[in-house]
Length: 259
Image (tube, rainbow, N blue to C red; front, side, top):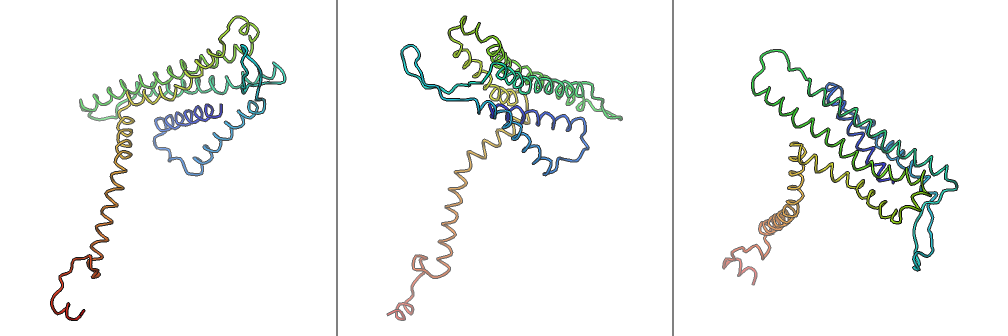
């Protein structure tokens, strides 16, 4: 649960940064103190949201279909408290991010679509660049919001229905835990889906990711090359200092002196 909260708040912070970058391009960049405050706030809010759920978890030991099982389950003192907590989580972790992302990305899309060209002579190349940017950026933003909705909506819908209609679900469905793991797996895939969307539809993201991968793959080679270069420099230094391994030519005078 804490990882989910961290991921969604980190995503929202990036969306807000994009919003200010487009609508306030001349605004000073974020200072380190402000950035540190945002990071600490994300962690604090995420931890606070998960504390009630962590407190009410316990280890259950029992039997299921004749087999002994040990499971970690959530056990609240009352159904009302569990329902309130689930509703708060659904509101904070799904509705608020969904509305925020929709508003921010819609504003960015409208800004890019109705962007006016600067006064003066506009070349055909400039018009082509503007049209390409609109055609690539707007579909990407819409796809990210749609992917977020379809990944997280089943999870929060299932959790809400399970809390408010637990008795009906428990009697009607025999595989409620299987359904839970399915919707949870779909929700966890959102980070992978978002990365694939950015890689497929964002030229800048794809270029930076490829450059980062090249640096990571070439790092062992650089380390080995650096080690070989260090050994070569050490050998040259030994040659300059007159070690026997340097291969100095021994003359007759030198040999007589040594003897």
